[in-house]
Length: 255
Image (cartoon, rainbow, N blue to C red; front, side, top):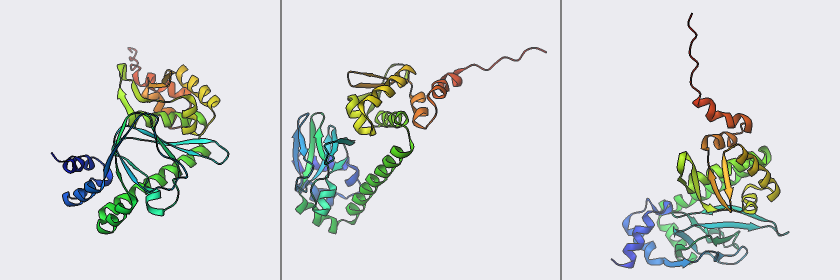
């Protein structure tokens, strides 16, 4: 099997390219080069002038933005089937964030000069790219709204629930084990809160039996409880959600 054929098969798994025909995928496969990176390696630096489009074939990466005063915000975690670098690809501006691998990764990289002409020849590709960017805007808007309307505990519960959906695997007794490690500081950067507040909220969620956080490993012990808190329910009421659902109906007293 030729390298290009293998790359076509890999590209089919990526949402951006999933609706393209064989000839179109072949063109992209011929332009792409494969790259691997180890855990901790930085692929792009915020502020640098580069314009490649990266397609994640295997592994996961964290996207971090640093404010002028030095504060860091963990914007997102990227996994297999996703792309990054599309903003600098289109607007010729410096990179808006730093992207760092959190495990061994395998990627396909297409240079800006090669990718742009494809957008003119492949309207489906352009539309899919616009849909990806629209998704980024929606998530950013939702995150901004959450930061102004939800308390830290609710935002943390919502974030952990979303991580469980994306990166969780089934554990014992209905639990969900998140396969990425997050320190309290990293969770704070993702949620938009101090490490101290994250520590307090994690202890509260742990006391309710909803989650466990040990040495960076997150486990959702009671998904129903966590989901209820993420939806804004008071923690005490959320804790009783599952118990109430399991309570057997009362027997009628004989007349």
